[in-house]
Length: 204
Image 1 (cartoon, rainbow, N blue to C red):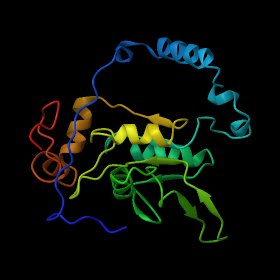
Image 2 (cartoon, rainbow, N blue to C red; image 1 turned 180 degrees about the vertical axis):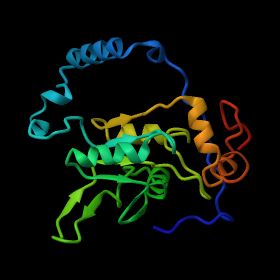
Image 3 (cartoon, rainbow, N blue to C red; image 1 turned 120 degrees about the horizontal axis):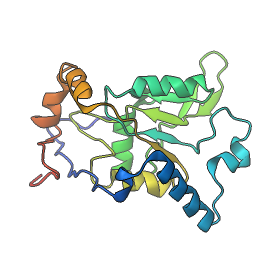
C-alpha cells in the first residue's frame, strides 16, 4: 500500500462518539444487560462457542484495540500474544495498520483486508492476525477509526462478531505522558488531524 502524501490528502471529517447511558453503568450492570440481549436474540456468548473452547483467550476475534497511544497499547498487545494468539502493535508485515485501515475504510472493505496475516519466518507458517493495537495514524495522513466518521461503523459492518476493546487511563497521567512523546500533540491539533478540542470537526 502506498501512503497518501501530505499535498494530496485533506483531513477526514471526524466527530467524538455521543455519550450513551452505558457510560454510567458499572461493569456488572453492563454485563448483565449484554448477556440478556444475547439471550433475547439466541446468540451464544463468546465463552460458549465451540471454536474458542480450547483457547486460552475466548473473546471473539478479531480483537481491535481503540485506545490512543500511551494508554497500554503495547502492553495489551503483548498480553494477548502471551495467551498464544497472533497479536500486532502499530505495524504488520504488510506495513502500518493505520494506513491499511484508512484505505480499506475509504473503499468500503474489511478494515484489515490485505494486512491480516503473519508469516513465521522460521517455519513459513502463515496465521491470521487476531489482535491489533495502536491502530491510529497521526499523519499525514491522519486516521483514527474511533474518531473519524464511519470508522467504527466499518468495523462493525465487516466484523459483527468481533471484539472492540477500549483501555482507559487517568486523563491527567495520560496527557502528561502523551504531551512529551514525539510531537504527536502538534500533529493532532495543528497539522494533519485538525483535532481542535471541539466535539466535532466543523468546517473540515
